[in-house]
Amino acid sequence: MGNIGLALASAGPTVSIALTLGAIVWASGQPSYSGPITILIIALPMLCIAAAFKYLNRTHVNCGATFMWGAKAISPYYGFMVGWVIFLCYSVGVISVSVLISSNLLSLFTDGDHSVIQAIIATLSIGAITTVAYIGIKVAAWLQWILIAIEYAGLAVLAILCFIAIAHHHPGTVPISAHWFSWQELGGVSGFISGALVAVFMFSGWDSGIMVNEETQNPKETPGNAVMLSVVALAILYAFFTFAFQGAVSADDLQENSDSAIRFIAQEVGNMALAKYMVFSIALSAIGSTLATLVSSVREVFAMGSDGVLPRVLGKVHPRFKTPQVATIVIGVFCLVGTWVYVLGSAGLKDSFNMIVNVDGLLFSLFYAFTGVTMLVFFRREAIRGFKKLILLLVLPLLATAFLVFIIIKSVPDLGGWGGGSMIALYIMLGLGVAVMIFVRTKNQTDYFKIKREVFVEPVPAVTE
Image 1: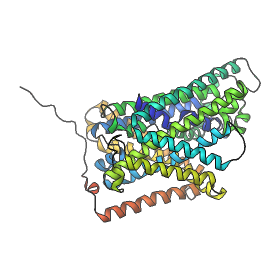
Image 2: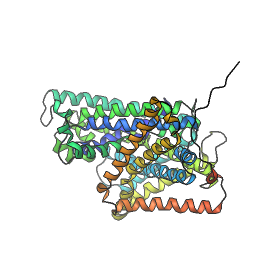
Image 3: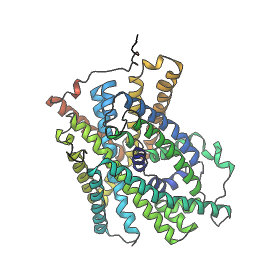
Image 4: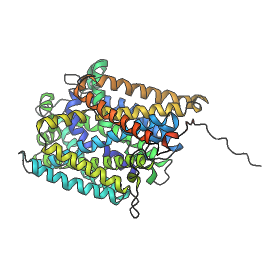
């Protein structure tokens, strides 16, 4: 339950729905109410990649995840770059989500622009989050369930009110129709791809349950089961609440208020008190997501530090709390500085930061695709030892990986093309990783790059007389 709480919180369902509801309805350029179907379809490749995490985690429990698995299956250089991508995923994510904490909390009391107050709220929030992460993983994991309970109480009430409003044909509502589940409503292939891009972003972060595998009871099984259950839970939650909310107001109003969709819907079908509660829930979701994302980022940095490809001091464990001591402080400070720079920065600086944030969903897709590739290579011999294994270890992860690669390629035009600002930011971030890898390899102070390739072969049971 603790692992699932971290995974659900990292994906930030309440924040994700608030940010993507308008986008998924207007994904194809015109109103479409097939979002729940798209979400359920995208859950299938996500479930396949979650299975890849499960199988790989069984063979080697390491909080660096594909950083270590990729090194053993393919190459240490491949593993390092995947580790760098994971670090970028969570480091960029922890700043982008933490910005939402102060903005939503401040909006409860004023609609004005108070950058300094927003920065102070962010400082207090991030300080508290870092402290919780520093004290211990159990505290962090179970705090998530308290936040989730508060959030989903509001979402459940709002969903009921939306269904009531639709049933009574309130002005602006869109009646539920069987047409919502048709291929025409989906918009064909192009419409599905546009919606899929949004859905992939919604799911990103569910892997947090695997990043704390070394701190979990029964570490070979529990984290893998947790991430698979998390994907199923997210699929159900996203599909249900998207289905409930999307028809509560007109598509035009939803598009016009896409930045505050949940608040707007709550005000339309409920009252101002419910709207304030939903804003508070979004802030709590942002707090939970920041905490889970920070915990995951810290574990990746800890793993890379422990193996000497980042400063070894990052691999230091607190003697009492048994948490990554230095890594937690470093990532917490990094998050704090990034938030202050964004909140108090100029318009040009915010635009530059937004370019980086825009590629975070693409980074997560890369991370998941790389894990699928690692799964295919590592289990290639085992996959041909029976039809069931062929399907589970080869066909399904291959299809999921191919789909993610397809989504990555199709997402590039929305980021300004291969030469757009967001993609240039991605090239710079990846290039920096290559530079760090070359520097560390040249120093020759770690055995990580001497890891030998392995392939999984199921051990033969011992014969007893």
